[in-house]
Image 1 (cartoon, rainbow, N blue to C red):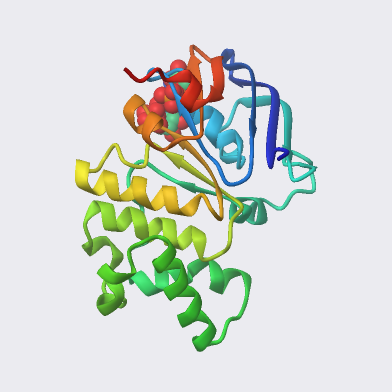
Image 2: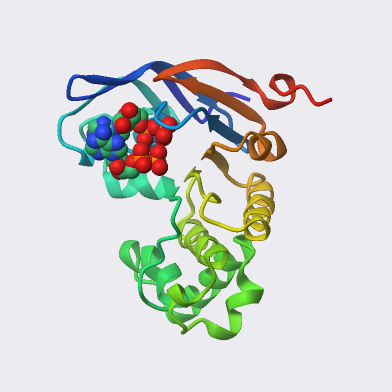
Length: 237
Ligand code: ADP
Ligand code: ADP
């Protein structure tokens, strides 16, 4: 299969500081791709390039090729709202909006379309089921999303993305704020989601990368040191 997203020779400068020094990684459909490396090596910076979150920071200069389904995501006519729907992001700290579970998951659907109540109900149930949190929230859809556990909040945030049908899900250390059980639930959810989506996950956890990812890219000091199939990169005793 050919790549869904190809990045070539990516350089990023924060002012004078070169934080990415020529990164080349391709992402194939229906795969989980881990980005690992020590703190400060540029993992989050690279991830944020993939849906143009770095555009928000002043003094940032980005060069290189970003080809998503045959189009350049840095082309001047790209609609950033559409791009961030197609390539959605989940953060380290779960960040549900401070309103009900229902309204959280409905958010993007209401922005882009004018769905009927029935349509909305269906899509919300479907998204929460895909994010494997439906059983835990179905009796409390009107409860504030922030009242749930960290792991549940993270899966509600994943459902919020899934509701608008992304192609790619970016996750920046999505389990590092969670306990091991909630973390395992997120990993299991991601394993299920890869049949439909392409997943790119920043993690500092080597075991996590080896458990769930198809490919792993190692970064060090803004450079890509190694990238390839996880099963070949990790030698299991
Ligand atoms: P990682 O995700 O691997 O921990 P980051 O991408 O957060 O690394 O950071 C890479 C480097 O860029 C670090 O040296 C960090 O201090 C620097 N950096 C990150 N964000 C900014 C910013 N907004 N402005 C300036 N420097 C930044
Ligand atoms: P992460 O935990 O994802 O590696 P960091 O802790 O490096 O992220 O950064 C947290 C936030 O602070 C990010 O928004 C990042 O852009 C910003 N940041 C990091 N380093 C710097 C820096 N040297 N100057 C300005 N902002 C920075």
